Image (tube, rainbow, N blue to C red; front, side, top):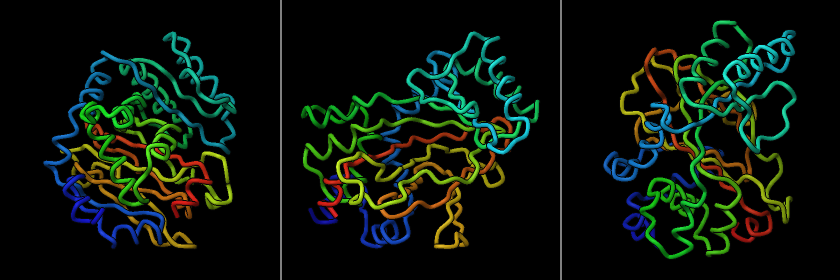
Amino acid sequence: MSDEAAARDLGFQVTEALREQLLTRGFVSFELPAELVDAKAAHPLRLIEEFLSDREPGALVIDLARESETKAEDGRVVGDLMAARGLERVAGAGPSDGGMFEIAGYYSQLREIKEAVLREGIALRQLWYFRDIDPAVYASRRAGESPEREPLTDLLLGLFERFYGELTEAQRSAVTGGSNSRFQLYTQGCFIEEHQDGVESALRDRAGEAVKSCVMMCYLNKGWREGFGGEFECALGPDGRDQLKVAPTFGRVAILDFTRFNNPHSVLEVVERGFVRNMIGREFRWPGTEASAAG
């Protein structure tokens, strides 16, 4: 498919320059037309509103600082805060070393825990909310049904294909089957410290194992202003000295490539009281044998 035809189909043209940035530096950011995102954002924005109004549950991530001398005691404090509200860890969450908590609950409960943790001055690596979006939203494409069931996450899949090549139905199922979309929320005090979470080796060296290809983020903040905090930072280059800062403005997309790179990145602390930084993100996974064939 030509770039022009793809643009008509997707509503946005992924240029060769954008592809080159992603595949030679491991990161690219660009802005989608506001009217395109407006037309596709109703469902995730409704999910966000349901969470913030306590109509539907979500989760809070609390990650204690690894080297903190008070880590064990801090973990007990978080556990006590959970127990006092009858809350438990997210079902299916992996084993914890005592430092990572993914707490399931309603926003008002989780907010109380977040604010208590900040008041206690507990040393943290990350602090933010999320709610997973049903992976079945992608089934519409595979079943030949209308993709309007979840237009924004379908748009992210379309962007993936423009950057990495068009997929067969089997490949599309493999790419989208390894994980699901989620929205993330950051209120005052929320942040993620600089970290790396990609795959160190190339996918072709992980034949047969599903690994992370990329993470794609689309921001939905119409009210963000400079000074609010919440920017996404990414360190590029072998020494990490080339720091890029991305403002989380409405329609802004950021993509981290993990097929060849593992760039350090972070989310700066939200400092504006009353501001809610929100985004929808998708982690794409691809079995190594198929990824190698697609190049």
